[in-house]
Amino acid sequence: MNLLRLSMMGLGVAFLVSGCGGSRINSKVDLSRMGPSMNAKRYANLEKIAATDLKCAEELTPDYLGENQYQMSGCGTEGIYELRCRMGQCSWVPDVRARAQLDLGCARAQLKTSRLDPVTVGVTGCGKRASYRALGSVYGLTWTLNSAVTEDAEAAATPTLE
Image 1 (tube, one colour):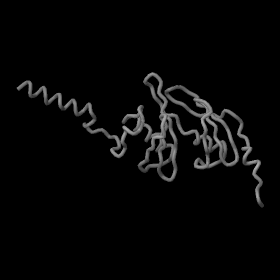
Image 2 (cartoon, rainbow, N blue to C red):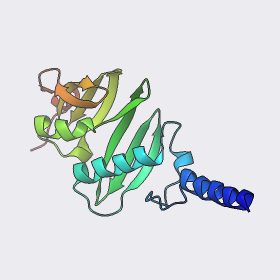
Image 3 (cartoon, one colour):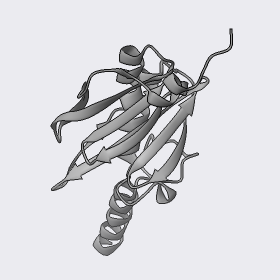
Image 4 (cartoon, rainbow, N blue to C red):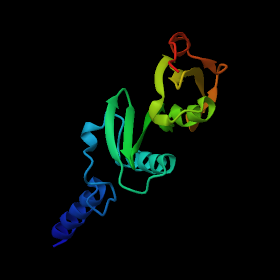
């Protein structure tokens, strides 16, 4: 009889540990296709950050871009987030375009980014360009303007018809 109780208790613990005990993860998202560093807790955190950033209360659609970068889409907009981990501590790097749209006076959808080095990103859009540097620690990164906002040379060279 004790063996039966012990096996039932072991089975119950196994269900709880495996996540069958009422996990709140979005069942529509296949975490196995979301990169090696993703788990349910990190995905829930990403959803929360993206919903606030994108001002979207609807369900967001994730897309894994590779190299721990994720695109979250919903409410007619999208954002790109990067998961950076160091010695088991991970944090989400926000979309640099959220900061750049203020400095460049340009809608997020019109901004293009290019990685210059691991902590610096160039942003172009609406005939302007600037570079941004990620500052902070593993527990929280933010983007700061790292150059003057300048007119894009390609936009300045193109004549306008009036």
